[in-house]
Every structure is written in C-alpha cells, then in structure tokens.
Image (cartoon, rainbow, N blue to C red; front, side):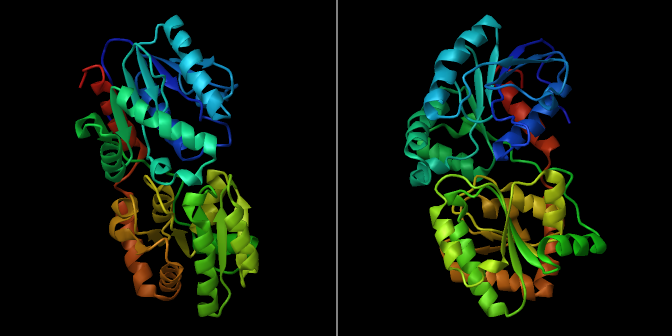
Length: 385
C-alpha cells in the first residue's frame, strides 16, 4: 500500500469529532480505519486531530498526531455551526494548518487553506423527513455549500458520486470514489460455535439478522412486516435479531412491532462490539438488509466475510456493492422482502451460490485499499499526485 503524500512535511488538520469511544457508527469507523493507516504511514506529516470533547487515547494512532480539544461538544446543529464557523478557523490559523480534512463531510466555509471532504451520501437530500427539523434544515442548507467550497470530494460508491453530481451540480472530475472496507475480524464460524451462539441468543433457533442504526431510512417497519409474513408462511421456529441503537423517530417501528403476530420471535440486542457482532452475525442464517437509501452498506460485506447469505434492497448503492452476491427485494414491498427471506431459509442451492459469490465479492473491498484511494484523492488537492 502506497499512501505517501509527499516528502515535504505538512500540518494537516482533521475533523475527528466522530471518533467516540465505544460509539463508532459507519462514518466513525471510516475515520478510524483510514486515519490510523494514513497517520502511521506518513510519519513526516503532523496531523492535528480536532475533537469536540475529551478524546480516547485509542484514537491517537501515532506520534505525529497532535490532539486538540475544541469545545463546545457538537450535539445540536446550532453547535455544529458554532464549532465549524467560529471555533475551527482560529484554531487552524493558530496552529498553522496547511490542509483541512473533513471525513464526515463537514467543513468551515471560509478556511483560507486547501480542503478535502468525504461526503458518504446525501440521503437527507432525498429523504429530509427522516430527520428532526433542525438537522434537516442544516443538512439541506449547508451540504451543498460544503460540496462547492471543498477543493476535492471523496465518496464511497459510484452511486453516491453520481447523486452528488446530479443533485449539487458538482463537476464529476472533482469527486473520487474510494469505497469502504470491512473489518478483518469478520470470518466464518465453526459449526460448534454457531450452535453455542444460537443456544445463547435464541435458544437454538435459526435467525435472520439486521445490523444498523434503527433509523427511519433503514426501513425497520417493513422488515418487521415482512418477517411476520415469512413466519406465517414458514410454519417453523425462526427468529429475527435486530442489532443497533434506537435513534429518533422510531414510533412507526414500535407500532408495527406491537401489532406483529410473531413479535415474540424478534430480538432487539442494542449496540454490539465488533467482537460480539462477529459471533452474532456469523451464527445467523442470513443478513436481511433492506433500507430505503444507502450510500454503501458495510453490513453486507461483513456478512459475506462471515459466509452468511444476503438479502438486500434493490435500490441506491446496494446492487453496486453486493453485485451477484445477494438476492434483492423492493424495500417498499413487504411481500417481496418476505419471499426473499423464504428463499434464503429454504433453498440450499441458492444459499450455496450466494456464499461462493460472497467470498469473491468481499475480497474486492478492504480498508487498506480504501486508505490508499482516500490518500491519493487527498494528495490531488495540493498537486502531489
């Protein structure tokens, strides 16, 4: 892997506010996996890690990182604005930063130095009502401006690149696709381990698994409705395990759950560490991941690495990422989703085909490759590539 920027030392400021101990979500994992490779691979540069609250030492990957605490904690869109527009510019001037990196897509609009941001997707542009009004207003007002102000943009799929170009009018040559990777902890489980995990989690029953935040665009209400149909059709014991933390606007999911005929077969686990998730995912019968909108879909690759077959939505980036290693369903059609579940549970030939394709497809993505692509995109900003 070659992620060397140049031989000239630079001071590079990085927005690391989503590096939160035991609370890494999708973008946080992107930061963690890429920044630890980039910083350790480029010891000649100084990296200013900009935290909005006290940091954990696990995110200080190398001696060339200088962590800075920049309050206030950004827990609300008003505080996002204060942090970006009023706190960061003075900090960057004081520490003589020469390049700004925004791995979460956020950036001050008046920097005075080169900038690079990663916009993972713009789901909020298409599904604004999934967000509280204050977040909705902020994303819709400022993300087009961030895209315009940045010298270069990275994103995680060709779908997202095309969406940014079409929605924001950005030049296609300004945007690089770096994809995401997948944690190497995910691997197949031995049969005795599968049995042990199932006994502990479901009393020995097979189960489907969903992994992700319980956010409206993840389509949990339709997943629950489809599972109810599937259980009525299958006529044998089977569970649905939902791994993730509840977020805002989960009322519809709660209402659907309360009306289910088979709600006793649904298990909500909350957030899991990667070590526990590896076991829970690897012991499942299949990944059921049918969101309305997704910029990439890391859980698909985690399932493939665990040799677990995948049912995915047939929209946005997911067919691009999973290719022929998944079966697909319309996320708006609960009957379609239910049929996909039934096929995963009852067709051994289909399962064998998906597992073989999944092994090959997962090999196309790694955090090493992502870090190299991301760094190559970054170094274009200062004309070193």
